[in-house]
Image 1 (cartoon, rainbow, N blue to C red):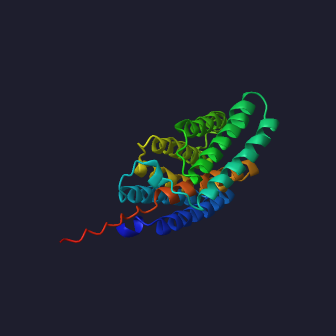
Image 2 (image 1 turned 135 degrees about the horizontal axis):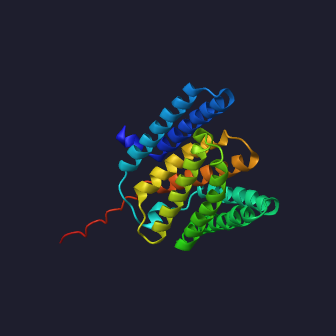
Image 3 (image 1 turned 90 degrees about the vertical axis):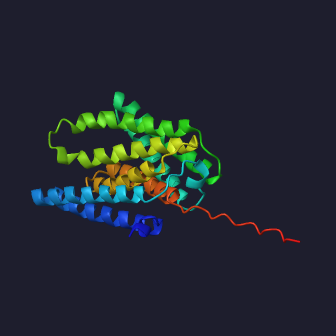
Length: 246
């Protein structure tokens, strides 16, 4: 079992399966208001986080940028995520009013551009500036502040807690990705937040609303692509043949 946790071809499908199960439970819980389903969802969330911990602990630290960001087709998912976030944020920039227009709309546009920029640079085997990751993290914070104020009006914690966990996971993953650009990345922490983020983003899709669905779909694609890249196996060094002895 420990060996399987080191293989991304096992971990990513397992996370997606947990996310799909959580999505279906969340959908049923919102329609029925069943407390039993909510408790089942809470238990599944604990199991998903435990799976994230076990997977992260089974892997060795690897702080460098290049080994954790090898160009692959998975990075195209990051570009798609950036395009989705740019679309949503652009609409919000022109439809929202007051401070929300600048925090959520303009901040989201800047964050989407940062996400697209370091995806393109990674595909080109160039280490992005840590400021790009910082820009994405700050944009997520700017989005979370006004949204949390809206959520907190309703004292029903179950109405927004999964979206809150998803946003925190995306922010923490983005923050730790910046460490790889400084050759000081924390691989285990990044993997934990990627797994937790993919799971909670899947749950958040069940809350509905086109902005919500597209946003958390983009975050899930982004974290899934990062998880695939960071869990890439290390390259084995070829042993040089020894020179013949006379």
